Length: 233
Image 1 (tube, rainbow, N blue to C red):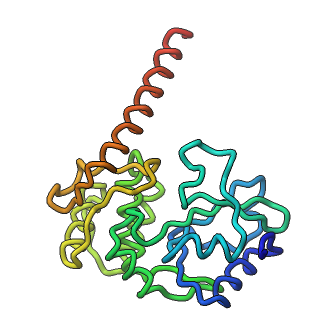
Image 2 (image 1 turned 90 degrees about the horizontal axis):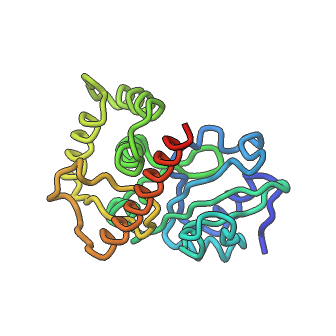
């Protein structure tokens, strides 16, 4: 019964001492700052081999107050740190968040950062393109600027630095390493796969249909909101 923790460092020290292979996926620069978790806004996105192994070790609790589709899905959990709730997204091998081959190699190539592990620079850059362009409704200016700075650090020459150019780089990298675009088992994760080479997609019809149903539901809700707004104004 490891949770609650006094500090975020205690969470990672527990994982490290137990020999758990994991990494923090992104946005880890201020991860150890207590201010990040005020009012329950902070969260930690991780990749691991087996999410249940971590859940059992740290006594993470299944989220019960968020979207119904997040409950008991093996991904969305919470712990208590210094009396504050901290959300954990535990992505794991075979979950389709990224293809299994890439997830395995991300974990093999992980590097230390403070008291926890992160991806190496190359994996971080290309996985962030994947996340920022394909797993979001659109590429934000914040992510675009961050990717541009990261590309300079890797010695890549960018001309327009738009989502099309980022996707060309990503697809070249994925072809070179034998990676695939995969539908996440978490249907709350967007996938704008119409933007990529269809030959690089693992076409799991069941997961694709599950995602399509969710996207149609979201589209209908957005349409109804627009109609309501138009009628009230």
